[in-house]
Length: 146
Length: 455
Image 1: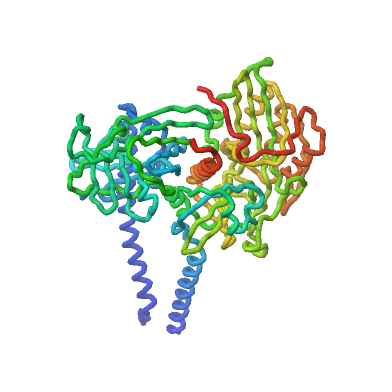
Image 2: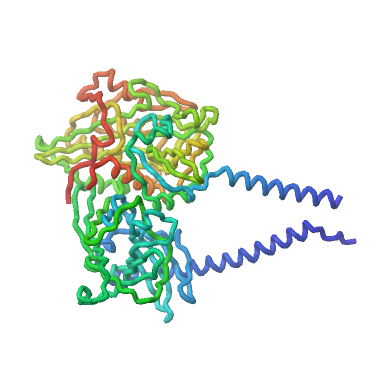
């Protein structure tokens, strides 16, 4: 009886550890992302643009430290239904040796990772600064240099 | 008879002990942090009352993000380092680091500590990274750090060069004649350009106009890894222009945003309100489209839904002056068909493209009725609702304040229904709405920028 209790506890511990590891491995560690770029394209096809075709559009490197500051605190957003999109920006980054296309929402402080079909959201205290940062980066891209 | 203690029980006991120890350590750290923050806040408040800012950056309204404070060791004692953000989300552009913009916010931190005599000390540290750091921000910081007191009085300037000792600038009255002065000279001047006000304020900082660095042979303390970066850019000696660009996406102060509009009757001032519609499927009533592609896969059920957007373009013209402001109503947080409400938020939509629009010429009273209505969009408790008060509903209701009646066709979507850009766009196209000038060619991301200045 004593042994079976112990085995049960061990199993629980092992299952918990494995579950935690799996969950952690599924999430993207955005703090490791680099080489952020923002593209000039805007329209209703931002999700349908193949990543390879982005080279056809003007782009600008984004402020890497600012992006790191913002995205490192992004958390996986579990939604019961797809989020409503009201316009956004196309960006790419490099992470773990791979190249990713990410769509940045014009509101709400969230972004969409195409590779994992997952949304990530910034903490509320960073959303205003994030939206301003994205828009300013975009304006810097589309407007003549001051 | 007592039962024997099992190994599992022992492990659990050890884990509990560890947790208690950790918690004790954490609570001590938290207490130190809290004490430092309380002292820092009080000290900053007292300084702000006693003196005036002496440089442009110090004079800008700013917020200290106390919730992001970190405790760091300062000699044998401890201090707290806290990010500072500027209320106007200033960006800087420096020609010695190339073209990219970087946030002054994330270059600036407050360091507070008690010195060896127990005296409160506050330092504002602003880091300007150089192109080496831009090339590889993962390496130790290189560039210039300004150390100033809270009011902007320069304390010292540190030059960080890769693989070399930190050098610090010693201000003297005759520094340019010193033989040991290095050739590096950075001066920081610039101007604050506000698209909202369309005005430029030139500024300069006397302490930054000419900087000489003399190696004193001793490494300086690194106050923490701060610094903005961007793409690479070439270093250049000589004057460095810094351009400050305010963030414009979220309209934090709607009164300030509208302050250039003047309420003048008669015919000298012309007021125009344009309803801009970005239909999710241009030219159709489709209320939403699924935005997934092959890689996202519809099977994931997680594809974003593109609902389009409706926003207002507000213009006042008199003489040769034109004031233009873009304004859209959004949720402050995320919304989906099963979570339809969020605090409302007014955003500047000057880069938002649209495919169809309708313009109305109104009088000053009508115009200001609209301004008054939309101004509530940021009010705490004023909610965005995907079904009953979305961006399209908001615009329709705003126009009603001016007596302009737009069709209120209801579209439907998963678990909901409401006004939508698809239907409003087609209603504007198909109906001859009184007083409306229809524009079928839409607007691009650069065709309807904010314009106009005032004091």
